[in-house]
Each structure stands twice: as structure tokens, then as C-alpha cells.
Image 1 (cartoon, one colour):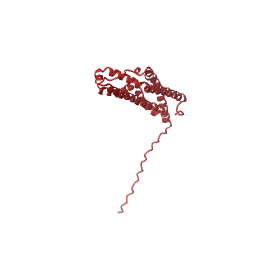
Image 2: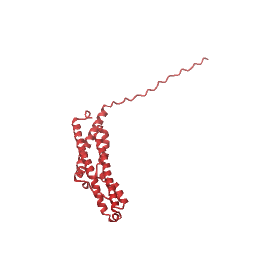
Image 3: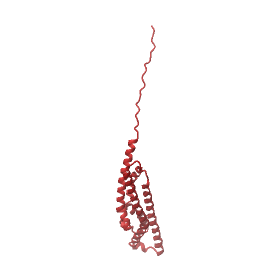
Image 4: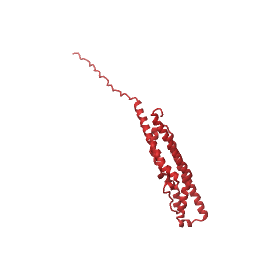
Length: 203
């Protein structure tokens, strides 16, 4: 790819890819360190706000229930982290045309809307036990640094990378079109009609 596009464009594209990857790594680390604990904290608030359901549990049942919720929260955070690692790995491909096709999907998944869905497995367990659903209202509920990366730094870096990637893909596609030889259309040849010689009748 480097030889096929302008060196300045390749440099800018490489730098923007590296910057985007750095922000992605920070987001992934925040999910690993902060998302699970944030969900558990919000879960405790939800349980405290449902005294009737809480009164029906013994201390042992509550401890067991909380441990199950903790495991669910950590698994949900881990699943999201694995998804983000897989998406971030796609940026490493040299096949820029294929990558451009995946960028819209990546953009939709690196959002607070997707992160907030991590609470769904926990809320299913809460609802089953008669508790109110818990929620994380915004990215700041995870951490201030996480909110900064997800809501500000990542989108800015992503927009820059996407613009350069699309430009590079168009350049490569244009060069491919120029170098691809046009197929000559074969002219159909119609066979010449031969006159049939008839037998002459003698009188």
C-alpha cells in the first residue's frame, strides 16, 4: 500500500491510525479496571432502593446474590473488552479498501450507547429477584478519564483516521482502474453464405 499512495498521505494515515489505537487502548483499559466496579456500585444502589425485595432475603441469600451479580458484572465488562480488542485489531490490516467498509460498524460500537448495554445481564438478574433495574446514566459514571476518551478523544481521532482512510482507498481504487487493461470486445463474424449449385435438367 505504501508504494501505491502518496508518501505524505501514507504518513498521515499511519500517524492517525497509531493515535486512534492509543485512544482505543486507553478505553479498553478503563473498561477492564473501572466498568465492572461501576456496575457493582450502581447495583448496590438499586438493591438499597428496593427494601421490600431486600427484606425477603436472609444474609446468606443476599451474599450469594451479590456474588452472582459481581460475577455477571465482571463477565459483561470482559465481553465488551474482548469485543473492543477485536475491533481495534482490525485497524492493523493493510487492506485499506476492506477496512473502510468496516469503519461505520466500528464507529457505532465505540459509543456510550453500546457500553451502557453492558448492564442488561445484571438487570435481568435484578428483575428476577424483584429489584429495580440499575443503570449507568453516562460515561462519567465509569470514570472521568473514560468519558474523556470515549466521548471526545476517540471520536476526534476516529474522524481524522476515517477521512484519510477513505482518501487512500479512493486513490488506490483510481490507480487500479487506470492500470487494469480494457478487454477488447470480440466482433462477431458471420459465416459467408455459399450458393448451392443446383443440378441442370437436360431436355
